[in-house]
Length: 186
Image (cartoon, rainbow, N blue to C red; front, side):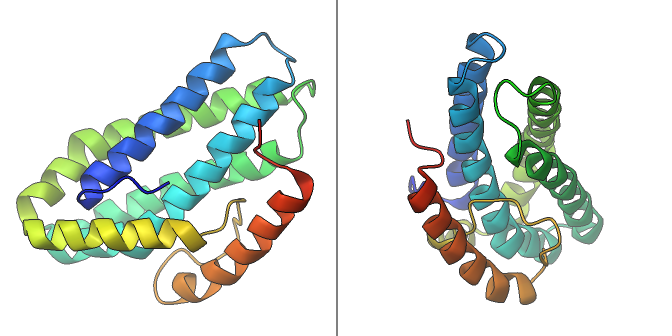
């Protein structure tokens, strides 16, 4: 969940971890119950990652990159689409007829989003933002992921300051639910 380094390194490590979970899902046959476990783990990581980006990365994009408002808005639209898919996926078991379709949609959406961030947003931010600010953002992102929600909340605010207020409470409730149900555990 927390890896160290500047914000870009932190988020790229998250991307690799989610891709590893996607690979585990793809390696199993349709209907295999472990596909749901890996999907839950991926959703938990994606939600924490998205919340941290919304709290700290996208405000920095708006501040430091020319045209950052439109860039951040596009990233938020990607998050909203992925969150709707994750919300639908939440109620599906691995054997559910919609599970494979929704997992496929989620993987496609996330892979496209990751490619856009890594090939467009991150290089532009690295160029425009001082290294000490990137390092500070890395620490803020790591802290945000510790208290972030682990379940999709499509109706929750996605911009500061309201998201920072709401995310901690939702995160506490989500982690309690996860502990009680064993969600995301191998």
